[in-house]
Image (cartoon, rainbow, N blue to C red; front, side):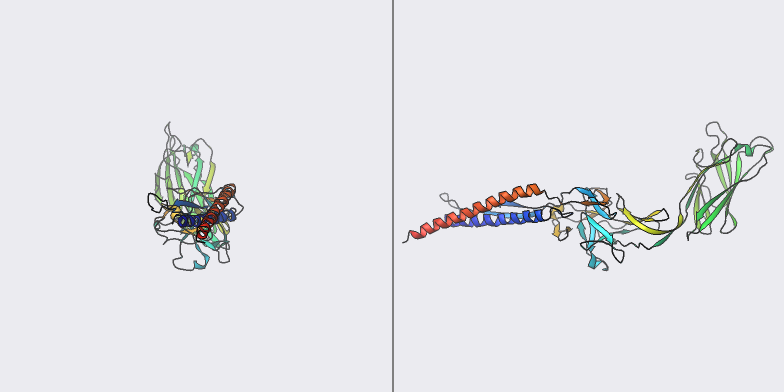
Length: 430
């Protein structure tokens, strides 16, 4: 019985070393595979009860595993939609064949090289479609459920898309001459034109006329601003602006009173005027601050005029930022957020089920997933123009290969020795 248990132990030794050899072979074969996670095998002794006078060899068994929570080195690439994660977390992907499904099956991966296919979907060379949350036309991403993949959809971009970018904000930094509000001044209006783009991205013009209030004596420190729109040819706002003349904050806005048009908001320093192409927030400045309109000295000086909006833009490229937002970049010089790619996290990454193409699916062992904004919680930042290398250390695998070969040979020797001893036992009957 003892010889028989020795034979069984030798056979089990061959089996477990064959399992370890399989993991080593897999690791070496995938040492250059992007996103590959090293596989390993651990041995556990098996004990079989015997009498005090005899020992029964129990042998050994192996359990294989994959170190999914290990991160590989990040290397740079030339493709903006090559993605890696600098830290924990997984990218949500699905199979290309399932992109038309109402609820495509969710898979997880840590890196990928995605490019638009003929329909505009971001697809990897292994047929994985990147998924994300779509942003609204204003670039904001709605609140989607975090414990479910219900809001995720395959990312689709249209490189031939034309998009309008209307003007919604204009900020003024203009100095009005204090001497114009002095008794005896001519009272001529100071005019300023500002280009804006309407809802069709057509160029229009706002005309701003600043007319001083000339008093009979002293300084009035008061101006009337009339805003006209070239699209309608009429006035869309009129405001009375009084400037402070104190020693501490002289020359800054004191009060702004709306005669027509939107009311002045002292918290934002802006008024809202309604053009033929939509509303525009016109920043005049905060009370007591020199960040907008000022009234100093005797010079009229438009220091700077900043605004958003541009002409119709043709989409030229897309790029990811560290927070997981996919931004569309247009040839007219503006960019717009079109998707957000959240990162998934599970309590036990090594409990995920491994699939082909370096993808995984959640299991009861891994725990339920949660969708995080990139860089928050346990997830790392998203890195564009980058790929994650394999976690395999070839030198270490070759060392294990030698050890496994020696162990396999030793177990084969045990079997050979037991066979010879059994042969001797058989010969005793002759």
